Image (cartoon, rainbow, N blue to C red; front, side, top):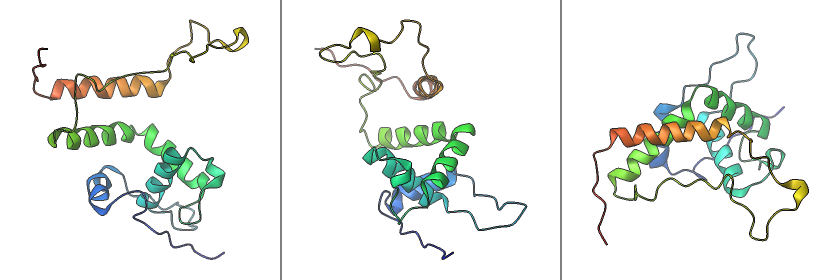
Length: 156
């Protein structure tokens, strides 16, 4: 099997990678040996490509590691709460540049209805629980608010 060299820089700039790289643990080699694991940057760029395009994991272009590799790495980072750390770092960077409007930053469309409504057969139950991802983002948002200095709102 031919080793693939992954082209980087398609989804992240070098300066963006420099900010995110310290947050991602180096992939450990398996005790059983085998092929060297794909780099964190290549996997993160593959994940970002999936998020940007909405494509299926099996449609991952050759310039990235396989879809299953990126999916597994995404889940490893999720289990280790690394996505929350990335979220904090990116929000902090944007806030330092004055690019965030904290009064408008958090919106959730989880239960927004379709414009013309759903048919009775597809309506969600009122008791549907929010996903673990949603609660983790709420926790990250609220903890981020506590760390920021109070910013007065503008009066109309």
